[in-house]
Image (tube, rainbow, N blue to C red; front, top):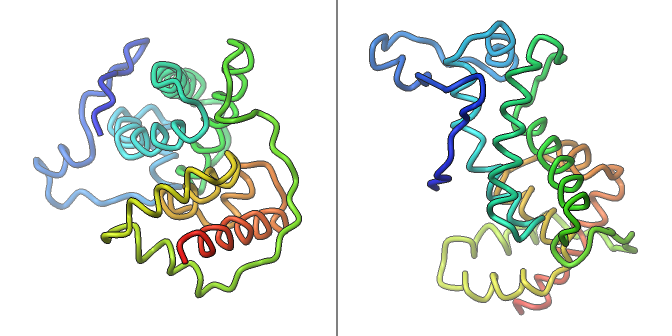
Length: 208
């Protein structure tokens, strides 16, 4: 995905881990904790890698929350600028993807409210009474993301509530686990399972 924007305030990424490995094939691939530590120490390669690895995912996720491409791009850019400028004051992070998803969600909602823009259908997320769905039913989405029924799945997703679409995106496209989804969306684990259950049940009934 081409985001067509770059970080330009105080820092411009120069190299990535991939580019470094061209010069040094033995360069190790860092786990999230190590990569975050290197970034906090001021390593430009680590920061550039965090940007390149996660910015496209954040953009895709943002589109599920706010129907404003420029707002999403601005918020992602602002987020990364803030990360770089405050890196020495940030705590340790074990899961960068989860941390960034939670951060961009908070920033998008706050900015959208400030700008009086609408978040999807609503910025108020209702509570749901839901029957949990068996894990087998997750195959419904996994199997159809890449086959000829993709159009029908897309149509079904459009009938979900904004919050249901968000949790489906986090699980099947951003590949967050339930604890990460719970933290990102700011709901309990029980609420996360219930929301997913209702979403999957609706998709299963719609597709069948």
